[in-house]
Length: 191
Length: 204
Image (cartoon, rainbow over all chains, first blue to last red; front, side, top):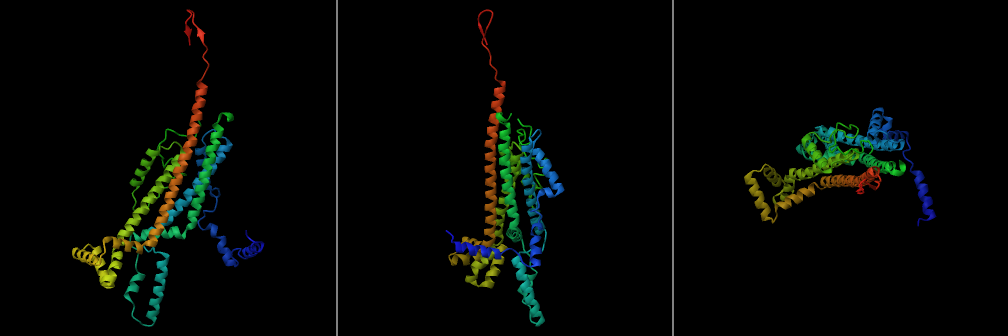
């Protein structure tokens, strides 16, 4: 059991951590949701909302009750959302794969440090170690490159995974509700 | 029966062109073959025989996730194969020195017969086997392999969850079909009275 004193101190500490304080930090966090546009509801995009409406009509079918139509719309929204996340992830990976200079963030950091070291040596007119110069211009070869691209994107963009998980869960629950709703509307007591 | 796309028994194969909002382009990368994807889709569709729009969605999900698992497994194998010479270099370094180990590893990767023979001799004399190279390569690439394994586990868990949803949906669909059949039978059923013919025989 948590003591009253502990609860008070937890609450006091929580009040101290209420997000960014500076205007720069607040500005940055305000743009978080716009980074991929995935947090925006599909219905806020006219072309996507048309797709949702068309798909919902296909799911509900002709002569569907308003309740069934509404359930079908929930499924369509989740499905379009899911497709949006998957297409975005695929585009990011494809773009990285088509970039011949793609490298892992760790390697970029190492290359930067090596470059700084070389510049310092140059300024002191010292000999340049061949290995280090080679490392700066090195490029990833397959299959290390493909591995780096997909694992880096998965690691650096956990938000995509989170969005996909949520959309999948929404779709699952919406289809279950639709199945129940349709069973109920086709049962003899509803006829 | 409902006249909905959600109950469409005559359809057995998801058509990507039919539901653009459902199916984006196949999730393939540059050098991957569309034919392999289509073949997998046909195989899964033929086995599952999707009966409605939801099953079309799930079949496509299962195919995409299966393909992702195949891709990641292939990647792990290729990663180990491509880095075998680094593993060999690390294995040989304590035996012949770093510089000589690197030279031998390069020759071994190029499959130069005399170098392969020398490497085999060096390994045997130290009581090592080709498994030692694999173990060393594995340890060099452990971080990458661990991440790939995590992605495989995630894809497999999602695929299993999708298959579970198909099962659940089919149970609901089965119950619905039974009820519809019952209603049809009830509608067909009429009481046939027992009548007697003119000549006294029973007529039904």
